[in-house]
Image: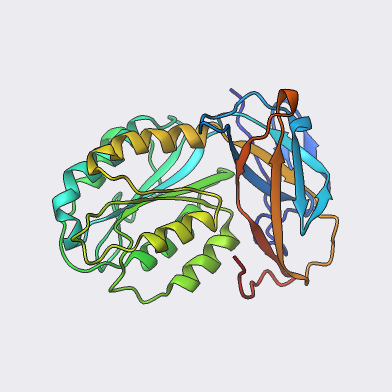
Length: 310
């Protein structure tokens, strides 16, 4: 399957504003305009993936106004993926299941993916070391997952910001973080608002997996939900920790079944603050589907963000 090559020029919109005319061929996707790029998952009423839609099935609205779709694709393209694994002391009893879930995702990955591991307690560290940015080698990634004991406090926010910064180093267009944690944070230098702001600017999809029980004093599912929803990702809160492998497989399928939609905003005033986005999908016989993607972005000519709205 042909990969999509995107030539990025980051200008005013943090979602992925790109510079001057869209050129699409069977071999590449070259963008040179202020294009907003969305990765959208579509599911039916039963939660099953809808994978047979075309451009004509979608409608995009920005601040309630319809937009013209300039680019549309539905291909299994290589992805830059960061696995962020909580290794604090509170996660020690769950460590075998966490490792199994992460390994399951690694084994289901595309050989062309750019993957990396961040293990975090109070000190987030790169599992692959400082000399290797990414890897698609299963043995390397499994070794990176198993090299850190579960102990200490939790710097969840620091780890996510580290992941958002690192994934930008990949040349791949589609970027994802998968965070496995109980959602608690008692050691970060950064705050949740800083994480949410950075996530909205990044165009990175974040999936969160919350692992805790009723006796876990560090649990914070609300934080995990906010982080995922801010980026068009999804939060999973399994009732049984043993379900994490199934969840890992579901996230992998989700990533592989997404549509890529690009539009040039009709409002070209890029100092206009926060803009909301809504994507609708309609199937045969007017069937209505649920579309999950990011809900908005900050329009700023300086590339800076203001207060986010949710």
